[in-house]
Image (cartoon, protein in one colour):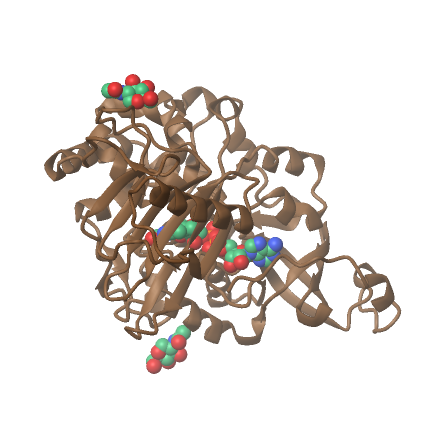
Length: 481
Ligand SMILES: Cc1cc2nc3c(=O)[nH]c(=O)nc-3n(C[C@H](O)[C@H](O)[C@H](O)COP(=O)(O)OP(=O)(O)OC[C@H]3O[C@@H](n4cnc5c(N)ncnc54)[C@H](O)[C@@H]3O)c2cc1C
Ligand SMILES: *[C@@H]1O[C@H](CO)[C@@H](O)[C@H](O)[C@H]1NC(C)=O
Ligand SMILES: *[C@@H]1O[C@H](CO)[C@@H](O)[C@H](O)[C@H]1NC(C)=O
């Protein structure tokens, strides 16, 4: 469902002779769109920002690479049950006044995510064998440890949420946020909570136990833990379909979204920004705007068309990104009603702090109410691709069959009903970079060359947190417009 990255750059020279040239900086366009603000990416943060900007009297245009809004929010229509199944984002974790946004878009938050009962079989997918003597922590131990985790991270909530704008100066960064997550777990006795933290969202970090605790907190922090403990909502619309929100935003924004489009060149100056955008059928459109808001992940590939200056390239170039994949598959050997979770503890030990690192197939869960569908999550390294991860998933299931963990099936092979390549996410840097003032340098990019940034890399990977981050960030963007 997601659009492939387009190969751009060809054919522009030819187009340049054709249409009327509107500004000298933007030749070769049949059409120039003039707006106050151009937003790149229409996922959780970009879609919200576009609505906020409109509501605050600004004209906007959104450039979205995919053929739909929503980013990590995606869905699959199950033919058997007729129900929409959320693929990717599963719920909106209650945070401050973030539910204002669905309400604004006439989408309810009255539904609630159901946490599936834990029927998982713990398997080392490299050997295909069940992990001997492994059992999940007792629920009471898990909840007690989650409570300790919440108490430990609530102290830092205002430093890291709704984003890193209030992050302390290097000398004042609490050591807790810099230490590898494994040490933080030892320090606060959180072992029994780690499988739940990892399963919910933290496995996407790639090597979760060794990244600075800050990034685990951004991936699985206060709103997530409160939802797990039942003290805050994990909301979904009454329909259960999170995508309803983005359908409503798409209606609201109408022609102000350029779908299946990417920026191919950009000129960012004090007077404003000029972008050349390539859309379907190689159509080139120019955009002239006073301000630019980047909401996609700031990977080198995504940022290449924006001709970053040295400072921007140096700061954004420090980010490392694992890759995340999710979707729905079927395989005749998988046993319905079951779930399979990748674990690599020390043989014979109940160790809740040892996890497989990327690339790995983290979970395969039977989707209740369907005949043979399983939802999966997998995490790759920065270099992994759809092809390499599909191969790894096939190999992981084959290894379980070869080891006798799953029954063999005639001609059985994995089929993907939907495979969502969520791409690079969970932006992270080393503790040494944090000590060297990385966050301050990152925040200093806001407004440089009329360019602002929202999205998970500047805030945290939760839709609701991003909506609150926009409320803090965007007033500085519109100042003087
Ligand atoms: C499997 C999975 C489960 C998750 N579960 C939850 C959950 O339950 N609750 C939750 O709150 N969060 C969840 N998340 C986290 C999710 O990352 C955030 O909530 C949120 O979607 C991040 O928003 P964003 O705006 O930063 O990025 P995105 O939502 O990814 O939006 C970025 C947008 O930019 C577009 N784009 C990318 N590159 C370009 C380009 N070059 N040009 C133009 N457009 C581009 C993308 O197509 C996308 O629409 C989950 C993520 C994954 C992968
Ligand atoms: C929400 O519903 C109200 C009342 O029907 C309507 O006036 C408004 O335009 C709707 N807003 C959106 C964003 O759909
Ligand atoms: C758990 O495993 C990790 C990684 O192998 C190891 O460092 C740690 O000491 C183990 N903990 C216990 C309690 O065995």
